[in-house]
Amino acid sequence: MRVLGVDPGLSRCGVGVVEGRRSRPVAVRAGVVRTSPGEAVAQRLATLHAELTALIVETRPDAIAVERVFFNANVGTATGVGQAAGVVLLCAAQAGVDVVEYTPSQVKAAVTGDGSADKRQVGYMVAAQLRLAQAPRPADAADALALALCHLQQPGRPGHAGMSPRLAAAAAAAGPGAQIVERVVERRRAQVREPP
Image 1 (cartoon, helix red, strand yellow):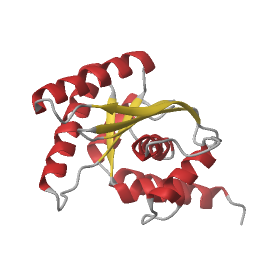
Image 2 (cartoon, helix red, strand yellow):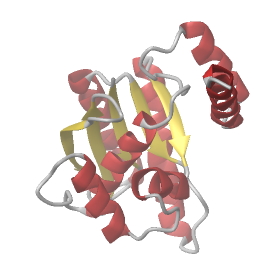
Image 3 (cartoon, helix red, strand yellow):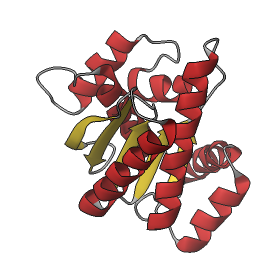
Image 4 (cartoon, helix red, strand yellow):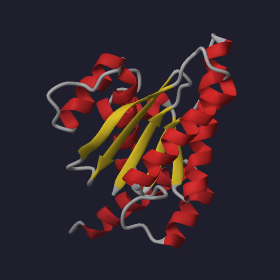
């Protein structure tokens, strides 16, 4: 499975492509798409759209994992991040690629085991899991790889390898609770298989 992780931002949008299974992921590509603060917002969004569309065509991901946007004390930053996230969702829809949003704490917990980990810890664990000499720079690229790794660790999500179209539709309709139910079912199956 190949996953494109996107850490949305208007000035710097982190992108990272990870391929493989959750037990042995490989980094395919990481970096940032930059736009100039001196340009009009519409032009910056058009640039972001063109770059992300080209990246999707080039890397052909099975799924796109994007950070869910939260309100920020800095309204300007929150607006730019929200606009960039909208462009990511548009690019995914135009390419017909499943997109899943994760909260920052979900990503941190999946990659480090701690939902409140700092950026340094996330970068360290991304490098360790992908067997890189050091964390990708800038941090937006490491965050994008962390998003892709987070998705690889989520069985039952749309775009997950080996998932039937019917199950993918059911998981999408069920929302975030679907993975919790799936884990409970897996535990019960394991208990049934265990000899008395």
